[in-house]
Image (cartoon, rainbow, N blue to C red):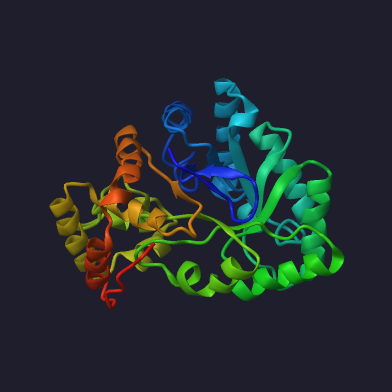
Length: 329
């Protein structure tokens, strides 16, 4: 396993991590979660990602039960939560969502209870909140750090401008600014990491815990001939994912990427994940495998990175419809 410093912090995260967005509670049970987290941990993964909204709190409860049963040394791994959407779904009342001091504080306390831990290593503002002053957000996160409830705070799907504004406020009041961002990043979703955040990387430093490196499974090739019944796009309520990814043009590109993976004698998922972590601005790529075989294959991405020389990277750009860039990651 390779470990990378999270931005300008001293925290080291495994370049591959394990998340629970759709998988926990909706796709896998405690037994399978226990097995998959065990495989991940034994492979050197030290970051496990979660959020209040995942399965409306049930995902954190499941991870908490697994971690308690595993009884791993708490200092050997990092866990996260995110706050914004709330966990009550349609029953959310005012102050049970957003980034107000009230909700962030209560969401943190609830996450600690569900995950059965004394502190969160990483705590994310899951989306920007136009209705809460950024000063309130920064002060609240700084207070949670001072209280020992969280160690680092960050953002998820914020713009580069919004992140820099948080840093401006933090500097103005001598507070701790956001250390990491969790954006979507994959071969089809590149704008934020490759363009929007460049000034943030350069000026203040930023760790990135990217989600959906396989584009909700599209980059596994499993949707090339339709939607399998046991896939996440077949889950009720995830039609928006289906509408976003199952597009003929994208499927055509996936098939070309599959041909390239075959030439390299690697799996398409491993190639796609390796492409993500080839970028030095990616601290860790969050895996969301639901089967042992999938996870073991995803882990081979660590070995595929070395095969991604400039020629291969240019072939990928050509397939994606971009001008070859002679990548020098």
